[in-house]
Amino acid sequence: MSRPLLQPAGLLQFLLPWLLLTPVPVARVEARRSRALLPCPVACEPTRCPPLPTCSAGTTPVLDRCRCCRVCAAAEGEACGGARGLPCGPGLKCGAPFSQEYVGGPWLGTCGCPATGAAVCGSDGRTYASLCALRAENRAARLRGALPAVPVQKGYCGDPGTRSAGRVRSKYNFIAEVVEKVAPSVVHLQLFRR
Picture 1 (cartoon, one colour):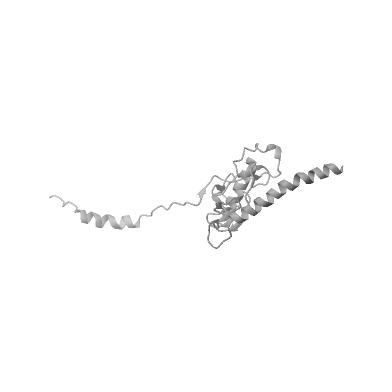
Picture 2 (picture 1 turned 30 degrees about the vertical axis):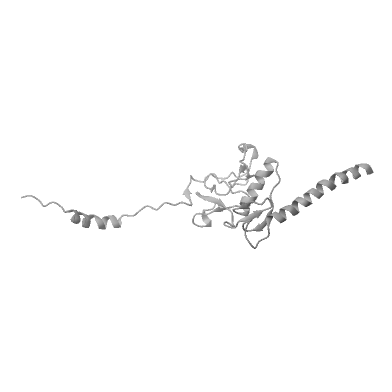
């Protein structure tokens, strides 16, 4: 006696409950687990610190999580926290994946500007994504020997109903031209008095 073959519909009725009850893994985008935290030394010995690597443009050296050695700070959008304890740069905050108890813990977060989404118009006429982005550009400009941009207004440079960055920029340029013309004569007078 032969057994009847399972029909496709019968097979689907048999497998469907099992497929629905099987858990689906959910990916976590904001954080990932890092290696265990390295313990901080009881007493800080700066002579045992590794040499400071060359920091990328726009980042500044800061103290590590143990407040002992200088490390390059993480920039906006880069990973922070975790086993290395990489801190965020000035004005940035490490986005805790779940709650504040994990900041400095074994979880990696992402450095971000506290006022994300708040565009800023700079004195150079460019719109920056945030005040932090403007500051990072200024740090990079100083390293290149260029003049930093000043925040002129909140929002985009070309927004109707806001002050024109062109007028403010021309005002700054006018002041700079006056200082350039007056400063040499003031220096000359000071030297003449001696």
